[in-house]
Length: 188
Image (cartoon, rainbow, N blue to C red; front, side):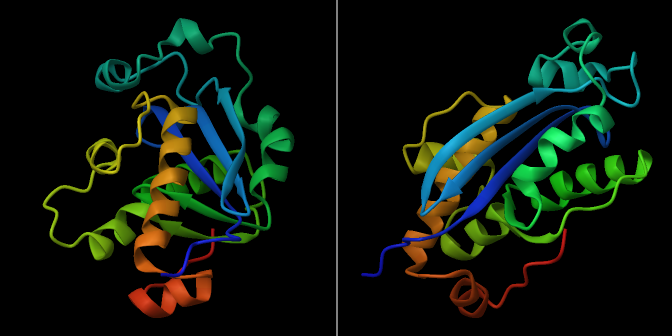
Protein backbone atom coordinates (compact mmCIF):
# COMPACT_ATOMS: atom_id res chain seq x y z
CA UNK A 1 0.00 0.00 0.00
CA UNK A 2 1.33 3.45 -0.92
CA UNK A 3 1.63 5.93 1.90
CA UNK A 4 0.73 9.58 1.48
CA UNK A 5 4.22 11.04 2.08
CA UNK A 6 5.47 14.38 1.00
CA UNK A 7 2.22 16.33 0.81
CA UNK A 8 2.48 20.08 1.44
CA UNK A 9 -0.71 22.12 1.90
CA UNK A 10 -2.49 24.51 4.24
CA UNK A 11 -5.83 23.58 5.77
CA UNK A 12 -8.04 26.61 6.33
CA UNK A 13 -11.21 27.24 8.33
CA UNK A 14 -13.26 30.39 8.88
CA UNK A 15 -15.88 31.07 11.51
CA UNK A 16 -18.24 33.86 10.55
CA UNK A 17 -20.27 36.52 12.33
CA UNK A 18 -22.82 36.53 9.52
CA UNK A 19 -22.85 35.01 6.03
CA UNK A 20 -19.39 35.60 4.57
CA UNK A 21 -18.08 37.98 7.25
CA UNK A 22 -15.24 36.23 9.11
CA UNK A 23 -14.66 36.65 12.83
CA UNK A 24 -12.01 33.93 13.13
CA UNK A 25 -9.51 32.21 10.84
CA UNK A 26 -7.58 29.05 11.58
CA UNK A 27 -4.76 27.53 9.54
CA UNK A 28 -2.87 24.25 9.78
CA UNK A 29 0.36 24.26 7.78
CA UNK A 30 1.30 20.78 6.56
CA UNK A 31 4.77 20.01 5.25
CA UNK A 32 5.88 16.54 4.19
CA UNK A 33 2.50 15.22 5.42
CA UNK A 34 2.97 16.52 8.97
CA UNK A 35 1.27 19.45 10.67
CA UNK A 36 4.09 21.89 11.37
CA UNK A 37 2.18 24.95 12.52
CA UNK A 38 -1.34 25.84 13.65
CA UNK A 39 -2.40 29.49 13.62
CA UNK A 40 -5.53 31.29 14.74
CA UNK A 41 -6.71 34.89 14.40
CA UNK A 42 -9.76 36.61 15.84
CA UNK A 43 -11.05 39.16 13.35
CA UNK A 44 -13.26 42.19 13.78
CA UNK A 45 -15.82 41.37 11.07
CA UNK A 46 -17.02 43.68 8.32
CA UNK A 47 -20.54 43.59 9.81
CA UNK A 48 -19.38 44.60 13.30
CA UNK A 49 -21.10 45.11 15.71
CA UNK A 50 -23.72 42.77 14.22
CA UNK A 51 -23.36 39.05 14.94
CA UNK A 52 -26.01 36.60 13.84
CA UNK A 53 -27.39 34.88 16.94
CA UNK A 54 -27.10 31.42 15.38
CA UNK A 55 -23.44 31.94 14.43
CA UNK A 56 -22.66 32.94 18.02
CA UNK A 57 -24.45 29.85 19.26
CA UNK A 58 -22.38 27.59 16.97
CA UNK A 59 -18.87 28.93 17.50
CA UNK A 60 -19.22 30.88 20.74
CA UNK A 61 -17.50 34.02 19.43
CA UNK A 62 -19.34 37.21 20.42
CA UNK A 63 -18.91 40.85 19.47
CA UNK A 64 -17.10 41.64 22.73
CA UNK A 65 -14.51 38.96 21.84
CA UNK A 66 -13.53 40.80 18.65
CA UNK A 67 -14.27 44.47 19.30
CA UNK A 68 -10.58 45.22 19.95
CA UNK A 69 -9.27 42.82 17.28
CA UNK A 70 -7.96 44.04 13.91
CA UNK A 71 -10.08 43.83 10.79
CA UNK A 72 -9.07 41.36 8.07
CA UNK A 73 -7.35 43.99 5.92
CA UNK A 74 -5.00 44.80 8.80
CA UNK A 75 -4.22 41.10 9.30
CA UNK A 76 -3.77 40.27 5.61
CA UNK A 77 -0.01 40.92 5.46
CA UNK A 78 0.45 38.45 8.33
CA UNK A 79 -1.93 35.85 6.88
CA UNK A 80 -0.98 36.02 3.20
CA UNK A 81 2.47 34.35 3.49
CA UNK A 82 0.79 31.25 4.92
CA UNK A 83 -1.59 30.80 1.99
CA UNK A 84 -0.04 32.50 -1.05
CA UNK A 85 1.35 30.00 -3.59
CA UNK A 86 0.01 27.11 -1.52
CA UNK A 87 -2.51 24.36 -2.03
CA UNK A 88 -5.39 25.06 0.34
CA UNK A 89 -7.67 22.41 1.79
CA UNK A 90 -10.96 23.03 3.55
CA UNK A 91 -13.94 20.94 4.57
CA UNK A 92 -16.79 22.25 2.42
CA UNK A 93 -14.19 24.41 0.69
CA UNK A 94 -16.68 26.38 -1.38
CA UNK A 95 -17.77 28.12 1.83
CA UNK A 96 -14.30 28.93 3.17
CA UNK A 97 -12.90 29.95 -0.22
CA UNK A 98 -15.92 32.22 -0.79
CA UNK A 99 -15.38 33.84 2.62
CA UNK A 100 -11.77 34.49 1.63
CA UNK A 101 -12.66 35.78 -1.84
CA UNK A 102 -15.50 38.05 -0.68
CA UNK A 103 -13.44 39.48 2.18
CA UNK A 104 -10.48 40.19 -0.10
CA UNK A 105 -12.83 41.78 -2.62
CA UNK A 106 -14.46 43.95 0.05
CA UNK A 107 -11.07 45.33 1.11
CA UNK A 108 -9.74 45.55 -2.47
CA UNK A 109 -6.95 43.10 -1.70
CA UNK A 110 -5.50 40.82 -4.37
CA UNK A 111 -6.27 37.11 -4.22
CA UNK A 112 -3.42 34.79 -3.33
CA UNK A 113 -2.04 32.42 -5.95
CA UNK A 114 -2.88 28.78 -5.47
CA UNK A 115 -5.43 26.05 -5.84
CA UNK A 116 -7.68 24.28 -3.39
CA UNK A 117 -9.18 20.90 -2.59
CA UNK A 118 -12.31 20.08 -0.61
CA UNK A 119 -11.94 17.34 2.01
CA UNK A 120 -15.75 17.03 2.08
CA UNK A 121 -15.91 16.32 -1.66
CA UNK A 122 -13.04 13.86 -1.40
CA UNK A 123 -14.65 12.12 1.60
CA UNK A 124 -17.78 11.47 -0.47
CA UNK A 125 -15.61 9.57 -2.97
CA UNK A 126 -13.32 7.95 -0.39
CA UNK A 127 -16.01 6.61 1.93
CA UNK A 128 -19.00 6.50 -0.44
CA UNK A 129 -20.79 4.00 1.83
CA UNK A 130 -21.18 6.73 4.48
CA UNK A 131 -24.39 8.71 4.66
CA UNK A 132 -22.91 11.65 6.55
CA UNK A 133 -19.84 13.71 5.64
CA UNK A 134 -19.66 16.49 8.22
CA UNK A 135 -16.22 17.20 9.67
CA UNK A 136 -17.16 16.12 13.18
CA UNK A 137 -18.79 12.87 11.99
CA UNK A 138 -15.89 11.87 9.74
CA UNK A 139 -13.27 12.78 12.33
CA UNK A 140 -15.13 10.68 14.89
CA UNK A 141 -15.14 7.78 12.41
CA UNK A 142 -11.37 8.20 11.91
CA UNK A 143 -10.56 8.71 15.63
CA UNK A 144 -9.49 12.32 15.14
CA UNK A 145 -10.34 14.32 18.24
CA UNK A 146 -10.82 18.09 18.20
CA UNK A 147 -13.00 20.89 19.55
CA UNK A 148 -15.48 21.59 16.75
CA UNK A 149 -16.21 25.14 15.53
CA UNK A 150 -12.90 26.52 16.81
CA UNK A 151 -11.19 27.64 13.61
CA UNK A 152 -7.69 26.43 14.49
CA UNK A 153 -9.04 23.09 15.74
CA UNK A 154 -11.23 22.66 12.65
CA UNK A 155 -8.28 23.47 10.36
CA UNK A 156 -6.06 20.92 12.11
CA UNK A 157 -8.83 18.30 12.03
CA UNK A 158 -9.39 18.99 8.33
CA UNK A 159 -5.65 18.54 7.68
CA UNK A 160 -5.62 15.20 9.54
CA UNK A 161 -8.76 14.02 7.75
CA UNK A 162 -7.35 15.00 4.35
CA UNK A 163 -4.11 13.10 5.09
CA UNK A 164 -6.21 10.08 6.05
CA UNK A 165 -8.17 10.37 2.77
CA UNK A 166 -4.91 10.43 0.80
CA UNK A 167 -3.73 7.32 2.66
CA UNK A 168 -6.98 5.43 2.05
CA UNK A 169 -6.96 6.43 -1.62
CA UNK A 170 -3.32 5.33 -1.92
CA UNK A 171 -2.21 8.38 -3.84
CA UNK A 172 1.27 9.84 -3.65
CA UNK A 173 0.77 13.31 -5.18
CA UNK A 174 -1.94 15.82 -6.01
CA UNK A 175 -1.96 15.02 -9.74
CA UNK A 176 -2.64 11.38 -8.91
CA UNK A 177 -5.44 12.44 -6.55
CA UNK A 178 -7.09 14.58 -9.26
CA UNK A 179 -6.77 11.78 -11.82
CA UNK A 180 -7.96 8.97 -9.54
CA UNK A 181 -11.08 10.83 -8.37
CA UNK A 182 -11.65 12.81 -11.57
CA UNK A 183 -11.80 16.06 -9.64
CA UNK A 184 -10.44 19.52 -10.21
CA UNK A 185 -8.47 21.74 -7.90
CA UNK A 186 -9.85 25.18 -8.75
CA UNK A 187 -7.86 28.37 -8.34
CA UNK A 188 -8.34 30.35 -5.17
